[in-house]
Amino acid sequence: MSAIQPPAELVWWKQPLDKVEGTWIGIALVWSLIMFFMMPFWHVYGKQNLSSEAYRTTPQAYMAKTQAMVDQYTIRTETSAQLPVVRPPPGSDVYLLGRLWQWWPLLELEKGQTYRLHISSMDWNHGFSLQPVNINTQIIPGYEMVLTVTPDTSGEQTIICNEFCGIGHHTMLGKIYVTEGGR
Ligand code: CUA
Image (cartoon, rainbow, N blue to C red; front, side):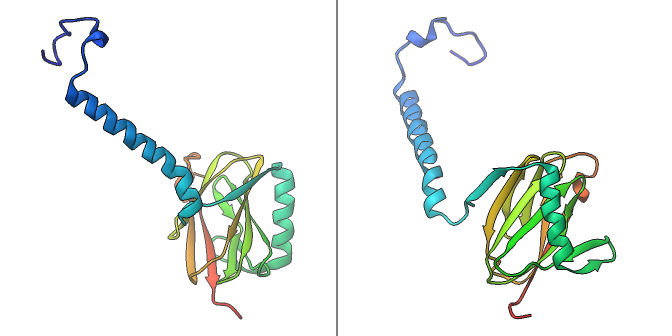
C-alpha cells in the first residue's frame, strides 16, 4: 500500500496497529507529556519565565499616572525624538505606555535597584520586548501589566514592539538607560 493510493481497507481504524507505529505513538505521547509538565516546572525553577501582575485600568487613568511621573522626574529631553527621559527614584513605581507608534517616556533606571515597572497601551495591542535581556510581554489596552525588575547590567536597553500594530510598527522603539548606582 502506498500513501498516494486510497487505503485498500477503508475502515482503517479497525486494522491492527503495527508495532513500529504503536512505538512512535507511545514516544510522541510520553514526549508531549514531558513538554507539558516542563511548563509549570520551569515557571517555578527556571529563571527565564517572568511573573507579572495585571490589573484593569483605562487609557485615561493610566495616562494620568504616567504624566504625573513624567512631570515629577524628567531629567532631560532627547532632542532627536523630543522625548522626555525620566529618572524615577530607586525602588519606586515606574510607568511606561505604548501607543501608535511610540514607547513613552524614555526611562533611566539604576543598576541593582528594584522597580515595579507598569506598562499599558493607549490604543491597540502592542508587544513589549526588552533587548538584549529578552523580556517579553503582551501590552493590551485596558490592562496594566506590572513587572518587578532589577537591572543587573548598566548600559542602554532597547524596547521593541513585537506585536504588529500597523504602518509604524517597525519604528516603535523605546529606551531604558541603566546607570551605575550612586550617580
Ligand atoms: Cu506597537 Cu507594533
